Length: 419
Ligand SMILES: Cc1ncc(COP(=O)(O)O)c(C=O)c1O
Image 1 (cartoon, rainbow, N blue to C red):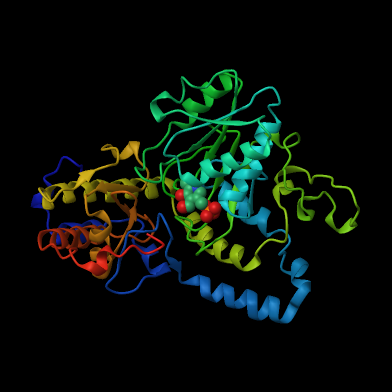
Image 2: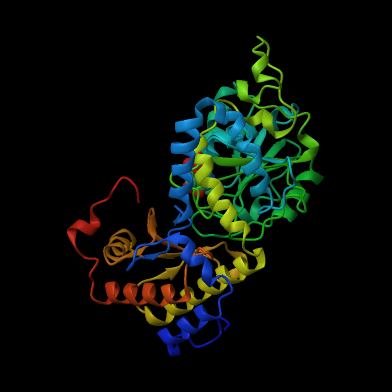
């Protein structure tokens, strides 16, 4: 089915038929999703794999409980960041030894931005785009203020970014899939342009890994970071990951020179010496329970074919857009994402003057997406567990919430801290 079909003629049976033909259909059972919930927020917090509580129980009760500190060696807790990093590498076109699991995305971003800037002592600019995930700009601003004027954050809009890469730019910092609109940057082209100007690139893959094609090494990317709790299904606050291209591994250094990034942490010597490879970006002790949960999510993703994931993600989002535009026509919704599925990631945003209240109305009926200020509703499509029939139910609910103004209640306008 293409997006040119007449969406208004589709019935629930058509969506159910698509589910029967879905090569990923059996993966749904690998997740614990409550009955009656249509979960379209896997781009923010991925669903819980069934295996995760069992694994966590094993690691807490048996490994921690019985083997205690011996587990660092006996169960290779010490090697977990590299082991899971190598698995994530397979999802993002990185090689073995180029990815490590550590800290949060924000902290990893700080480490790699600082490392990239130190590789470029004659250049002062971190180039990003206005409206990038604010966190990434905040982290760059923090580094700028620490640098006593040596480093400056400069912003250029997405269509001007390539032209803005000049001889002062040390590193181009971009989120591959935009957190609001889902617009995708051309990683290979921007990286080539950056390299031609002597600049480096740092990609935030938080909304990409597991959902859209990413090939860091083919694109010659220099550095990357990403979240563990979105499409990778690592759980709330899951540890993040970082990538360093082979050619920078010996020269780039982390600004957080913690003991687990030391070449020989258990020599307990006074002077810091960085570990070889990506291990130097570890700082303090890593969260074993968090990495355990993340590994379950990553292992599940690795059971699936990348092309199948991308095809399904695009099919779901195309159907969603087509159905919303036909069944909710005249209800004040406007597509805020690129229209072509290839030009966007695995979520879609619609603008609406009452976006917050409408989303609360949807959530009250079991259709879970999220709101991004000032006026966007975001709907994420996780190819491992979302079904085509979910799209039907979500759009039918949206249509009803809008047509009956069910969103127009004081409790749905009450802003929560987390939106
Ligand atoms: C693009 C992007 N980068 C970074 C983050 C923050 O990651 P963390 O909470 O791991 O620091 C998010 C969280 O939503 C994000 O969407």
